[in-house]
Amino acid sequence: MADEPTKILLDESELPTHWYNVVADLPAPPPPPLHPGTHEPIGPDALAPLFPMSLIEQEVSGERYIEIPEAVREVYKLWRPSPLYRARRLEQLLDTPARIYFKYEGVSPAGSHKPNTAVPQAYYNAEAGVTKLTTETGAGQWGSALAFACAQYGIDLEVWQVAASFAQKPYRASMMRTWGARVHASPSELTEAGRAILAQDPDSPGSLGIAISEAVEAAMADEATKYALGSVLNHVLLHQTVIGEEALKQLAKVGEQPDLIVGCTGGGSNFAGLFFPFLREKLAGNMDPHILAVEPAACPSLTKGEYRYDFGDVAGMTPLMKMHTLGHDFIPDPIHAGGLRYHGMSPLISHMYELDLFEAEAIDQMTSFEAGVTFARTQGIVPAPEPTVALAAAIREAQACKETGEEKVILTALCGHGHFDMAAYDAYFAGELRDYDYPEAKVAEAMARVPVIAG
Image (cartoon, rainbow, N blue to C red):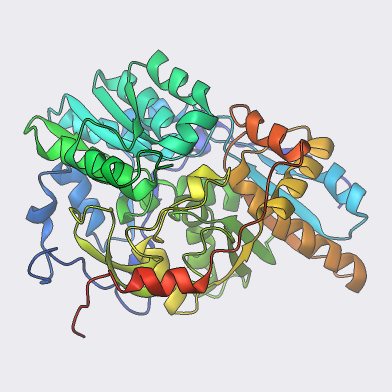
């Protein structure tokens, strides 16, 4: 296959017209969210204070395909379809017979995959007459993506960014402000949830769970304000499936099918966006890829977390969701993969893990950054810290192919560039990064504070 192109492109006419809802093809439905007080299943109306009904309908939908509004597709065309690359120079360095492909989402205006859901969320809120949104962000990719999207529809945005990332990546906040958002380090003095955390620990590095509490509290305090979430929930994962749908078409152009799909997981949206459409084809008997989720060892919700109902935030304001969790009051070590520092995994991803539809593993920070540097020195793109965990697994598998002689096709998603993450790379080169393996004892301690749900 020496004649294959290094960059595989689609034109605008091949942009997906529908998002794919994997729920329609699962062998068992996911468990329902529960009311935080009564522990009874909640209906769509319970989510109405936070989300417009159009997004709530997508959240609970069992429809296999949901049409992408033409207005959303027009904004998507600013960067979509995104390119699929064959990592030939990386293959040459590794001297592997494996063929490595990566779907590159760093071409979006915000530099990550997050606008794939930020744009439709802003669109549906604007259609519902919403004039202000609140949100949280970890490393800043989601906050900047939503700030960009809100600017397209004239919506005000207020963002709470995890304090550790706010300090490490100041230019992410600058980008959000450029698009018109207000940005606060979390925990902050602006909310009861933030003040409570600061009273316990004035130097708290923050967490996504804390930032979610602050953003939800601010939204609930104002009837004219809604809340937007960048990962975890079903409708967010749904919007990201444009990644996998495009990748299917692109691989078909060169006559390839993946033997291995590997993706980084924090809340689950990047991983879901890549592998859901391929899983559909696997369940239909059209291909048989091995699917691997990779998470940081410092925040191992799938590999060490317990599968049980827990809150999505620290203050316990959200519905209870059944997911792999490290405990809703989990405060992570301030690793540089800020977008993966969440205590829980997407309930839908967690459910699918329990159904054995994919495997998961955790990789340490130093191995991940080593892979990121190797990738940058061969392919030229400096990856964000988050996808380096997936790159580390992909490189390991390609090296194994060298030993076996297997011509395996490996597919991954490079969910964003690292242009705003150079402080993390500086720390790596200075020898200041440390591996941190989250202790199982801390998980057990946190589980004692997670609600016990009968059945």
